Image (cartoon, rainbow, N blue to C red):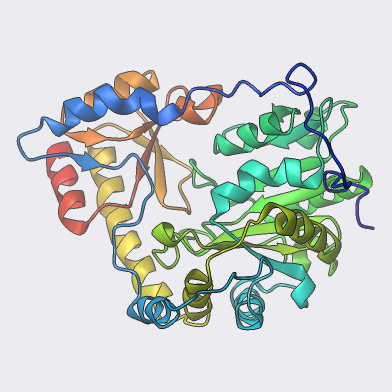
Length: 383
């Protein structure tokens, strides 16, 4: 059955709480600020910087998507939070074709202003509150923990639900394929997490933004009946067009799953004015309806992956997991910032593994999102 979790109350006539009653949560320092000195050092290389630290696409946005954006540029009115009927149909069609999802209705899908916005705000929008616990992966995208903090909750980083005691856990995050490790969770693991959450009335939110980037194994969505038993109860899947369609600059994503939960999120977002711009909705519709550009982009990343992996291993790195996503999870056995510095001396910037939790303290994340020319430069410097 659908969990009892409800969105934050929206009663009329609310008054602003006092600062003492509702303190602003203390957030961690923004991790990328720590990389500024390393970036300066790497940028001093005679052949220039090779930035493999951030997974931002560098290849062109598909022409059909650009044309759809331009065609919808005359948009004087407000867009709807729910998205156009054409966009909703495109999301449903995409999930059926590419993710083997169970039957979806329009109440099961909702566009979002990129995926990071949703990840950071989902606990609050679901009504997670102080004293509750959000469960996140042991090595994880930092915004999962930030979302819990913004809701006033705590988070526990663990890959084993059995390690969680009697804590009140209303929300469990999954990430497969994973950022930063590239790990893909098998169907049996996904099934166990969904069953565990349903027994406790918790929501499972699965971040599947890299699902089109499976290299050695085929990722499976929580929307697949293999995982959920043919029911969407208590399940949400988060998808992004940033990686699959090079739309990071458009801020184009969506959430799909339990229609009761999605409808509740839609109401919260209507009150909050969280609307994807109309031209972006048109671009999303075009991108989701066009599977033809996906494979050429996959092949670009696959070639870059093979080159970088070989060069890293030649330079004494060990690459772990990395069977999917847009990253190589690599280690030299040294503390991560020491490795970041070693690479920066060669003009290569990567992300330290401890950005993603203490368990990453001896790894670095190497992004595949650089041009062929810059990847070639990195390979020459490593070999």
